[in-house]
Length: 377
Image (cartoon, rainbow, N blue to C red):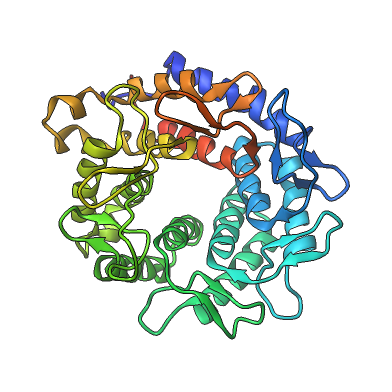
């Protein structure tokens, strides 16, 4: 199975959809030429356009990643300049969450999610453009993360006040996961052992504070801090991140836990009928949110590129969930000639049809994972 480069029709069609539909859409109709920023959301055909109320730094930097890896460098350059122009907080440091339709800072609380994606986007942009300004922004943002968001226990707070002095929301797994993703990208361009040490520390804290021991799953909140919510998409995402970097994570048990999380999520969180990944489960494996969001499907596909998935399960249903089958389902159920469907109900009804500017990141990371895996379908 793991032999040569993809020549599959499914992979070629996915690439064509990215280059022929998604990139043109977000560089024209989905792009404000005056501010040089992607709109937060654009409607599908037949939907009424909603008034623009904000532009988010995180959306800008996710699209910076998308256009950088696609080689659309002129557009990527514009996004990088807009990121610096509109979202830097000159007074307090770090990044504002959003600006309003006129470019005035709107949501100014500091969130780890945005800062993590700035590191990630700048690393990916620098890798392809070699722009020193991108590396400088990466290092400045890294300093803010480590000196402002990091707690005395080694975790990271999720949201801080505008001036960083007050904790608004404590640690959550999702922004810490994306911080891990960002640090891996930074490590790829700098090969600094500091990043591998930081990632090992993050893994140890995740094991201590977020792992639900009976299932091995990573909860959304620290264990004991609220109702247990398990999102299968996040288990697949963590599984992919950790399994692809065994040299970094081999000093702890995170990969072992995530093997269990992968099995649990596959058996309980994937529909036997459609192959769709549900939004959330409880600790008993019962579905608590049955909607199937596009991003969770891409994370299952990424997880299926890891060779060890072939040996983790032995039940009939799990063995029927192949990468080829999931890619075919993804194309049929979620991709459209105008873009994509953001979320479906289990019966196939459209839950959300408008298209957020952050979603192309998920489609492109899935495509890149397929290419990097070097699989023959």
